[in-house]
Structures are given as structure tokens and as C-alpha cells.
Picture 1 (cartoon, helix red, strand yellow):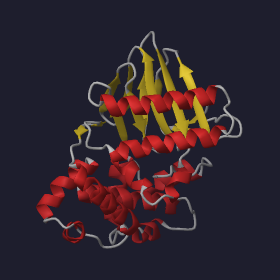
Picture 2 (tube, rainbow, N blue to C red):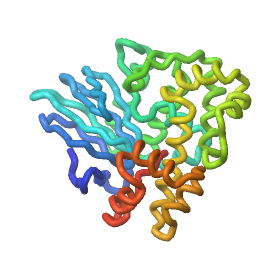
Picture 3 (cartoon, rainbow, N blue to C red):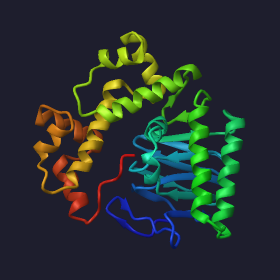
Picture 4 (cartoon, rainbow, N blue to C red):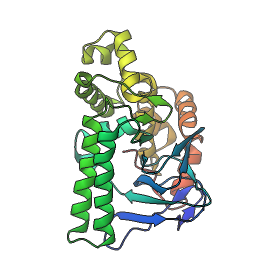
Amino acid sequence: MIESLNGMHETVHYKADTNLRLYHNDQPENYPYHWHTPVEIIVPMENSYSVTIGRQTITLEPTDIIFICPGVIHSLTAPAHGSRMIFQAEITMFTTIRDFESILSLMSPALKIANAHSPDIHGQILNLLLEIAEAYDNNHFLLETTIYSKLLQIFVTIATNFTINFEHISHEVHLHKEYAEKFMSVCSYINEHCTENLNLDEIAAVAGFSKYHFTRLFKQFTATTFYKYLNQKRIEHAQQLLANPEITITEAALSSGYTSLSAFIRMFKLINQCTPTEYRNLFTNAGHQPPDPS
């Protein structure tokens, strides 16, 4: 259920003394487009469930698992009868782990794991989620430590088995396992240097591939192009700068790797469906921080 919604921003009411929320939902309630800072994991237990992200609707059958990354705008549609487990967790503490942002890049904006396509990995992750639910429902001793350790294990399982046919929104991602570590490193490099003057030739050389081979593999790995990925990271950086009212729109643009203010505004609106000024007003005037892109 959504207990607190301001515009499209949901404030998640966590379990007391935790940054976790899990509930077993059996209501035929539809949720409008919204976003929140925690990661969200949904598992239908009885009957189907639908998640819409952008223009794509993803249907979840019983025990299918979907991961929705922080800050992603989505809506939910329930059938007349059914039940599902919905788990939300703040994961900002994981962002201090160097590889973690690259793992999220694999999963962004959302990732579906179905038993029909990946039975072994699906079973492992489902068991971990059921263990999380048991610990949460029973107020397990060391509740947060227990749950976060299992959640981190889930993320590692996904990253180390990403050659399996997970459904990455509208893309089927196939990448030889031998390349996975290399492209994790490439994504980390782009994340750290996105505000600099990066170009495709330079990054392809860093990866050790020809430009054309790199372009094909990068899209397989991230489900997007190099320049779209780069711009996404630059805009995420700008979003954090816009939380500071003393930083002008122009300063945010220049500090995020853009030399043209008009290009920055155009790209910002393309990614966020609003201008930088509208974004700043939406979040800062309402007393909210922009969503953490990680």
C-alpha cells in the first residue's frame, strides 16, 4: 500500500528502527505512477500482477520476481483476487561498495527473473526473499543485519549470473560471462568520470575492443547505448547538484559535463520529463531530496 504520496513521490513508512518495509498485499488496489528512494522487490504469490514502467507493462506470474531500482517511476495493477509480497529497502549503504553501482546499472530501471527462463537462479533468489520475509515477520534477532546480508547476496547472485536470460524490461540481455567483469569495470569507470569529456573511442580503447564491437557488447550489457548511459549518469549527477538551491542551473550543467546549457536542458527533460527548474521546484519546494540515482 502507498501510505504517503506527495505528487508522484512516495514516502515509505519503514518498520520501526529499520530502513525496511515488507508487506503481504492481497488487496485489488491499483497504484498510480510514483517513485521512491528504496529499491522495491515484488513477488506475486497467488495470481498475476502488473508493473508499468514508461510505456512497457510487465506481467508477473506467481513467484516471478521483479526488482525496481530507486528513483524509477512506475505504476502497479492488481487483479480482482490474488496476493503478493512487496519488499522495500534503502540501499544507500551499499553504494560505498565500489562494484555496487555497476550492479545496479545491470538491473536499471527494472529486472524480472522468472522460473521459466532461469530456474536455478530464480530458486536461489526466491529462497533468499522468503528467508527475508520470515526474518522480517518474526522480528528476527539482528533484523537489519540478517536481511541486508541476504539482500546483498541476492545482488551478488544476479551480477555473477547475468548471462542467464533475465528479462531486462524490453531487452533480453545476453553477454558472455568472460566479458561481464570487464564491462562491470567499464561502467564503474564511466560512473566515476561521467562529468569529464568522455567519448566512445576512448572508452572502447579502455575496454580493449574496437569501437563497433564495444558498441554492440555495451548495449547487450546495459540495455542502452554508450551515449545514453553517459547522459543518464551526467543527469543523475546534476540532480544531486540541483538539491542545493545555491547552485544555479548553469553551474549544474557545466559541473555535469555539459558545455551547452540548451543541450543540458534538452537532455534533462528527455530523461526526467521535466526541466531542471521544474525538477528543483518539485523536490526542494516540497521539502524532499531528489531520488538517489544509485
